[in-house]
Image 1 (cartoon, each protein chain N blue to C red):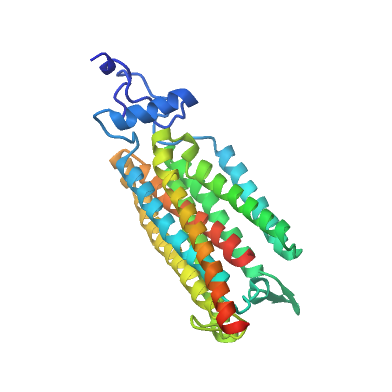
Image 2: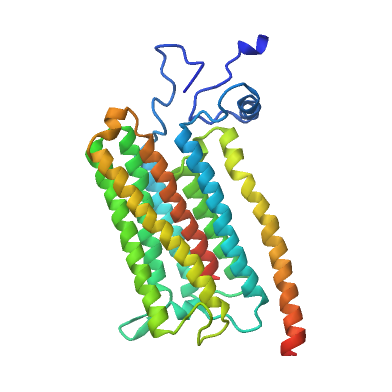
Length: 115
Length: 234
Protein backbone atom coordinates (compact mmCIF):
# COMPACT_ATOMS: atom_id res chain seq x y z
CA UNK A 1 0.00 0.00 0.00
CA UNK A 2 2.22 2.76 1.22
CA UNK A 3 5.81 2.80 0.13
CA UNK A 4 7.09 5.62 2.31
CA UNK A 5 5.71 4.60 5.68
CA UNK A 6 8.51 3.73 8.05
CA UNK A 7 8.06 0.27 9.53
CA UNK A 8 6.23 0.43 12.80
CA UNK A 9 4.75 3.83 12.02
CA UNK A 10 1.05 3.71 11.27
CA UNK A 11 -0.43 5.84 8.50
CA UNK A 12 -3.20 8.29 9.35
CA UNK A 13 -5.84 5.84 8.16
CA UNK A 14 -4.98 2.45 9.52
CA UNK A 15 -7.41 0.74 7.18
CA UNK A 16 -9.52 2.24 4.42
CA UNK A 17 -11.91 5.08 5.03
CA UNK A 18 -12.72 5.53 8.71
CA UNK A 19 -14.69 8.58 9.70
CA UNK A 20 -16.98 9.37 12.62
CA UNK A 21 -20.49 7.96 12.17
CA UNK A 22 -21.82 11.41 13.10
CA UNK A 23 -20.81 12.65 9.60
CA UNK A 24 -22.91 9.97 7.90
CA UNK A 25 -25.93 10.69 10.07
CA UNK A 26 -25.68 14.38 9.21
CA UNK A 27 -25.46 13.71 5.48
CA UNK A 28 -28.32 11.22 5.76
CA UNK A 29 -30.48 13.89 7.42
CA UNK A 30 -29.43 16.46 4.80
CA UNK A 31 -30.42 14.11 1.98
CA UNK A 32 -33.82 13.64 3.61
CA UNK A 33 -34.33 17.37 3.97
CA UNK A 34 -33.35 18.12 0.38
CA UNK A 35 -35.53 15.29 -0.93
CA UNK A 36 -38.48 16.73 0.96
CA UNK A 37 -37.64 20.17 -0.48
CA UNK A 38 -37.56 18.86 -4.04
CA UNK A 39 -40.83 17.00 -3.45
CA UNK A 40 -42.39 20.22 -2.13
CA UNK A 41 -41.38 21.98 -5.36
CA UNK A 42 -43.80 19.66 -7.10
CA UNK A 43 -46.40 19.62 -4.32
CA UNK A 44 -46.74 23.40 -4.31
CA UNK A 45 -46.64 23.45 -8.11
CA UNK A 46 -43.81 25.92 -8.65
CA UNK A 47 -43.46 26.68 -12.33
CA UNK A 48 -41.05 28.24 -14.79
CA UNK A 49 -37.53 29.35 -13.96
CA UNK A 50 -38.11 29.01 -10.21
CA UNK A 51 -38.99 25.32 -10.60
CA UNK A 52 -35.98 24.42 -12.78
CA UNK A 53 -33.58 26.35 -10.56
CA UNK A 54 -34.82 24.67 -7.38
CA UNK A 55 -34.93 21.17 -8.89
CA UNK A 56 -31.41 21.40 -10.34
CA UNK A 57 -29.98 22.97 -7.18
CA UNK A 58 -31.42 20.30 -4.86
CA UNK A 59 -30.34 17.57 -7.31
CA UNK A 60 -26.74 18.79 -7.39
CA UNK A 61 -26.56 19.27 -3.62
CA UNK A 62 -27.80 15.71 -3.06
CA UNK A 63 -25.45 14.29 -5.69
CA UNK A 64 -22.54 16.20 -4.14
CA UNK A 65 -23.32 14.87 -0.64
CA UNK A 66 -23.51 11.28 -1.87
CA UNK A 67 -20.32 11.38 -3.94
CA UNK A 68 -18.23 13.45 -1.50
CA UNK A 69 -19.20 11.84 1.81
CA UNK A 70 -20.98 8.51 1.28
CA UNK A 71 -18.62 7.49 -1.53
CA UNK A 72 -15.66 9.08 0.32
CA UNK A 73 -14.52 11.05 -2.72
CA UNK A 74 -13.72 14.05 -0.47
CA UNK A 75 -10.98 12.01 1.21
CA UNK A 76 -9.50 10.39 -1.90
CA UNK A 77 -6.32 11.60 -3.52
CA UNK A 78 -6.59 14.24 -6.22
CA UNK A 79 -5.33 11.85 -8.95
CA UNK A 80 -8.36 9.58 -8.36
CA UNK A 81 -10.76 12.53 -8.10
CA UNK A 82 -9.56 13.86 -11.46
CA UNK A 83 -9.67 10.44 -13.14
CA UNK A 84 -13.30 9.89 -12.09
CA UNK A 85 -14.82 13.37 -12.01
CA UNK A 86 -13.30 15.01 -15.12
CA UNK A 87 -14.35 12.51 -17.85
CA UNK A 88 -18.10 13.01 -17.17
CA UNK A 89 -17.62 16.67 -18.09
CA UNK A 90 -17.49 15.59 -21.78
CA UNK A 91 -21.10 14.57 -21.27
CA UNK A 92 -21.98 18.26 -20.95
CA UNK A 93 -20.99 18.60 -24.62
CA UNK A 94 -23.24 15.66 -25.54
CA UNK A 95 -26.12 17.19 -23.58
CA UNK A 96 -25.58 20.58 -25.24
CA UNK A 97 -25.42 19.13 -28.75
CA UNK A 98 -28.50 16.93 -28.20
CA UNK A 99 -30.45 19.91 -26.88
CA UNK A 100 -29.62 21.85 -30.06
CA UNK A 101 -30.47 18.82 -32.19
CA UNK A 102 -33.77 18.30 -30.35
CA UNK A 103 -34.76 21.91 -30.87
CA UNK A 104 -33.92 21.62 -34.57
CA UNK A 105 -36.03 18.44 -34.92
CA UNK A 106 -38.89 20.17 -33.12
CA UNK A 107 -38.75 23.11 -35.53
CA UNK A 108 -38.68 20.90 -38.64
CA UNK A 109 -41.58 18.81 -37.28
CA UNK A 110 -43.48 21.94 -36.42
CA UNK A 111 -42.89 23.28 -39.94
CA UNK A 112 -43.74 20.05 -41.75
CA UNK A 113 -46.59 18.52 -39.75
CA UNK A 114 -48.18 20.92 -37.36
CA UNK A 115 -48.30 24.37 -38.97
CA UNK B 1 18.36 10.44 -8.84
CA UNK B 2 17.54 13.00 -6.23
CA UNK B 3 13.79 12.51 -6.85
CA UNK B 4 14.01 8.97 -5.54
CA UNK B 5 14.54 10.35 -2.05
CA UNK B 6 11.33 12.32 -1.86
CA UNK B 7 8.18 10.49 -0.78
CA UNK B 8 6.42 9.50 -3.98
CA UNK B 9 3.39 8.11 -2.36
CA UNK B 10 1.98 10.01 0.58
CA UNK B 11 -0.47 8.47 2.98
CA UNK B 12 -3.52 7.12 1.16
CA UNK B 13 -6.96 8.28 2.14
CA UNK B 14 -5.87 11.79 3.05
CA UNK B 15 -6.63 14.95 1.10
CA UNK B 16 -3.41 16.99 1.01
CA UNK B 17 -3.33 20.79 0.73
CA UNK B 18 -4.05 22.19 -2.74
CA UNK B 19 -0.49 22.89 -3.97
CA UNK B 20 0.82 19.61 -2.60
CA UNK B 21 -2.21 17.83 -4.07
CA UNK B 22 -1.45 18.97 -7.63
CA UNK B 23 2.15 17.92 -7.13
CA UNK B 24 0.70 14.61 -5.95
CA UNK B 25 -1.25 14.20 -9.23
CA UNK B 26 1.98 14.68 -11.17
CA UNK B 27 3.97 12.21 -9.09
CA UNK B 28 1.10 9.70 -9.00
CA UNK B 29 1.04 9.55 -12.79
CA UNK B 30 4.74 10.12 -13.48
CA UNK B 31 6.39 7.72 -11.07
CA UNK B 32 7.06 4.15 -12.07
CA UNK B 33 4.40 2.63 -9.83
CA UNK B 34 0.65 2.16 -9.37
CA UNK B 35 -1.22 5.41 -10.04
CA UNK B 36 -3.97 5.05 -7.46
CA UNK B 37 -2.85 4.16 -3.94
CA UNK B 38 -6.19 2.43 -3.25
CA UNK B 39 -7.09 -1.27 -3.35
CA UNK B 40 -7.34 -2.36 -6.99
CA UNK B 41 -10.95 -3.49 -6.54
CA UNK B 42 -11.91 0.00 -5.47
CA UNK B 43 -10.17 1.65 -8.43
CA UNK B 44 -11.90 -0.81 -10.79
CA UNK B 45 -15.30 -0.21 -9.18
CA UNK B 46 -14.83 3.53 -9.66
CA UNK B 47 -13.95 3.01 -13.31
CA UNK B 48 -16.99 0.75 -13.76
CA UNK B 49 -19.17 3.41 -12.15
CA UNK B 50 -17.65 5.97 -14.51
CA UNK B 51 -18.74 3.85 -17.48
CA UNK B 52 -22.18 3.45 -15.89
CA UNK B 53 -22.37 7.22 -15.54
CA UNK B 54 -21.96 7.47 -19.31
CA UNK B 55 -24.69 4.89 -19.89
CA UNK B 56 -27.24 6.58 -17.64
CA UNK B 57 -26.34 10.01 -19.01
CA UNK B 58 -26.95 8.68 -22.53
CA UNK B 59 -30.40 7.47 -21.42
CA UNK B 60 -31.28 10.74 -19.75
CA UNK B 61 -29.91 12.74 -22.68
CA UNK B 62 -31.97 10.76 -25.19
CA UNK B 63 -34.99 11.32 -22.95
CA UNK B 64 -34.23 15.07 -23.01
CA UNK B 65 -33.84 14.92 -26.78
CA UNK B 66 -37.20 13.19 -27.45
CA UNK B 67 -38.94 15.42 -24.95
CA UNK B 68 -37.61 18.57 -26.65
CA UNK B 69 -38.30 17.33 -30.17
CA UNK B 70 -41.84 15.98 -29.77
CA UNK B 71 -44.68 18.21 -30.91
CA UNK B 72 -47.22 16.30 -28.80
CA UNK B 73 -47.67 17.45 -25.22
CA UNK B 74 -45.65 15.56 -22.61
CA UNK B 75 -47.79 13.77 -19.97
CA UNK B 76 -47.57 15.59 -16.63
CA UNK B 77 -45.60 13.24 -14.32
CA UNK B 78 -47.07 14.98 -11.29
CA UNK B 79 -50.52 13.70 -12.33
CA UNK B 80 -49.49 10.41 -13.93
CA UNK B 81 -47.68 9.28 -10.77
CA UNK B 82 -50.24 10.60 -8.28
CA UNK B 83 -51.73 8.22 -5.74
CA UNK B 84 -55.22 8.50 -4.33
CA UNK B 85 -55.22 8.89 -0.57
CA UNK B 86 -58.73 8.96 0.93
CA UNK B 87 -60.16 10.04 -2.39
CA UNK B 88 -57.63 12.83 -2.93
CA UNK B 89 -54.87 12.50 -5.53
CA UNK B 90 -51.50 13.24 -3.88
CA UNK B 91 -48.89 14.02 -6.56
CA UNK B 92 -45.83 11.77 -6.82
CA UNK B 93 -46.54 10.16 -3.44
CA UNK B 94 -45.18 6.72 -4.31
CA UNK B 95 -42.10 8.23 -5.97
CA UNK B 96 -41.41 10.34 -2.89
CA UNK B 97 -41.64 7.26 -0.66
CA UNK B 98 -39.35 5.34 -3.03
CA UNK B 99 -36.85 8.20 -2.85
CA UNK B 100 -36.89 8.12 0.96
CA UNK B 101 -36.46 4.34 0.97
CA UNK B 102 -33.42 4.55 -1.30
CA UNK B 103 -31.86 7.37 0.72
CA UNK B 104 -32.39 5.36 3.91
CA UNK B 105 -30.65 2.41 2.27
CA UNK B 106 -27.69 4.63 1.42
CA UNK B 107 -27.49 5.76 5.03
CA UNK B 108 -27.46 2.20 6.41
CA UNK B 109 -24.86 1.24 3.78
CA UNK B 110 -22.52 4.11 4.72
CA UNK B 111 -22.68 3.08 8.36
CA UNK B 112 -22.19 -0.59 7.43
CA UNK B 113 -18.90 0.34 5.72
CA UNK B 114 -17.88 2.15 8.88
CA UNK B 115 -18.62 -0.84 11.14
CA UNK B 116 -16.81 -3.07 8.64
CA UNK B 117 -13.59 -1.15 9.16
CA UNK B 118 -14.15 -1.42 12.91
CA UNK B 119 -14.31 -5.19 12.44
CA UNK B 120 -17.80 -5.36 13.92
CA UNK B 121 -19.04 -8.40 12.02
CA UNK B 122 -22.60 -8.60 13.38
CA UNK B 123 -23.42 -4.90 12.94
CA UNK B 124 -21.88 -4.78 9.45
CA UNK B 125 -23.83 -7.81 8.24
CA UNK B 126 -27.07 -6.57 9.85
CA UNK B 127 -26.76 -3.09 8.33
CA UNK B 128 -25.95 -4.55 4.90
CA UNK B 129 -29.00 -6.80 5.09
CA UNK B 130 -31.08 -3.78 6.10
CA UNK B 131 -29.71 -2.01 3.03
CA UNK B 132 -30.61 -4.96 0.81
CA UNK B 133 -34.10 -5.07 2.39
CA UNK B 134 -34.61 -1.36 1.60
CA UNK B 135 -33.46 -2.12 -1.94
CA UNK B 136 -35.91 -5.00 -2.28
CA UNK B 137 -38.68 -2.71 -0.96
CA UNK B 138 -37.75 -0.15 -3.59
CA UNK B 139 -37.91 -2.70 -6.42
CA UNK B 140 -41.28 -3.99 -5.14
CA UNK B 141 -42.69 -0.49 -5.14
CA UNK B 142 -41.35 -0.02 -8.63
CA UNK B 143 -43.08 -3.23 -9.73
CA UNK B 144 -46.31 -1.86 -8.24
CA UNK B 145 -45.78 1.42 -10.12
CA UNK B 146 -45.12 -0.34 -13.43
CA UNK B 147 -48.22 -2.52 -12.97
CA UNK B 148 -50.36 0.54 -12.25
CA UNK B 149 -48.98 2.33 -15.31
CA UNK B 150 -49.28 -0.62 -17.70
CA UNK B 151 -52.59 -2.08 -16.51
CA UNK B 152 -54.56 0.95 -15.32
CA UNK B 153 -53.12 3.87 -17.26
CA UNK B 154 -52.44 2.00 -20.50
CA UNK B 155 -48.86 3.23 -20.88
CA UNK B 156 -46.82 1.27 -23.43
CA UNK B 157 -43.32 1.84 -24.81
CA UNK B 158 -44.92 2.87 -28.12
CA UNK B 159 -47.72 5.06 -26.84
CA UNK B 160 -50.07 6.15 -24.08
CA UNK B 161 -53.44 7.87 -23.81
CA UNK B 162 -52.03 10.97 -22.09
CA UNK B 163 -49.77 12.52 -24.70
CA UNK B 164 -46.37 12.11 -26.33
CA UNK B 165 -45.69 8.48 -27.30
CA UNK B 166 -42.03 8.81 -26.25
CA UNK B 167 -43.08 9.09 -22.58
CA UNK B 168 -43.49 5.32 -22.24
CA UNK B 169 -40.26 4.33 -23.98
CA UNK B 170 -38.19 6.82 -21.95
CA UNK B 171 -39.91 5.79 -18.71
CA UNK B 172 -39.54 2.03 -19.12
CA UNK B 173 -35.98 2.28 -20.43
CA UNK B 174 -34.66 4.56 -17.70
CA UNK B 175 -36.49 3.22 -14.65
CA UNK B 176 -36.15 -0.35 -15.94
CA UNK B 177 -32.39 -0.08 -16.23
CA UNK B 178 -32.18 1.57 -12.82
CA UNK B 179 -34.43 -1.13 -11.32
CA UNK B 180 -32.12 -3.80 -12.71
CA UNK B 181 -29.20 -2.04 -11.06
CA UNK B 182 -31.05 -2.04 -7.73
CA UNK B 183 -31.95 -5.73 -8.10
CA UNK B 184 -28.34 -6.63 -8.93
CA UNK B 185 -27.26 -4.55 -5.93
CA UNK B 186 -29.61 -6.42 -3.59
CA UNK B 187 -28.04 -9.74 -4.68
CA UNK B 188 -24.51 -8.30 -4.49
CA UNK B 189 -25.08 -6.91 -0.98
CA UNK B 190 -26.67 -10.16 0.23
CA UNK B 191 -23.68 -12.17 -0.98
CA UNK B 192 -21.18 -9.83 0.67
CA UNK B 193 -23.28 -9.65 3.87
CA UNK B 194 -23.27 -13.44 4.08
CA UNK B 195 -19.48 -13.46 3.76
CA UNK B 196 -19.19 -10.77 6.44
CA UNK B 197 -21.39 -12.83 8.76
CA UNK B 198 -19.27 -15.94 8.21
CA UNK B 199 -16.06 -14.08 8.96
CA UNK B 200 -14.63 -14.33 5.44
CA UNK B 201 -13.18 -10.82 5.59
CA UNK B 202 -11.71 -11.37 9.04
CA UNK B 203 -9.73 -14.28 7.62
CA UNK B 204 -8.84 -12.24 4.53
CA UNK B 205 -7.71 -9.45 6.85
CA UNK B 206 -9.54 -6.69 5.01
CA UNK B 207 -13.05 -5.28 4.85
CA UNK B 208 -12.47 -3.22 1.71
CA UNK B 209 -14.96 -5.41 -0.22
CA UNK B 210 -17.72 -3.92 1.94
CA UNK B 211 -16.65 -0.41 0.96
CA UNK B 212 -16.52 -1.41 -2.73
CA UNK B 213 -20.04 -2.88 -2.56
CA UNK B 214 -21.03 0.36 -0.82
CA UNK B 215 -19.68 2.41 -3.72
CA UNK B 216 -21.93 0.49 -6.10
CA UNK B 217 -24.94 0.96 -3.85
CA UNK B 218 -24.41 4.70 -3.37
CA UNK B 219 -24.09 5.03 -7.13
CA UNK B 220 -27.51 3.43 -7.58
CA UNK B 221 -28.90 6.02 -5.15
CA UNK B 222 -27.01 8.75 -7.02
CA UNK B 223 -28.60 7.77 -10.34
CA UNK B 224 -32.02 7.87 -8.70
CA UNK B 225 -31.37 11.47 -7.57
CA UNK B 226 -30.98 12.42 -11.23
CA UNK B 227 -33.94 10.35 -12.44
CA UNK B 228 -36.16 11.79 -9.70
CA UNK B 229 -35.23 15.36 -10.60
CA UNK B 230 -35.10 15.09 -14.38
CA UNK B 231 -37.87 12.59 -15.15
CA UNK B 232 -40.40 12.90 -12.32
CA UNK B 233 -40.07 16.52 -11.28
CA UNK B 234 -39.19 18.17 -14.61
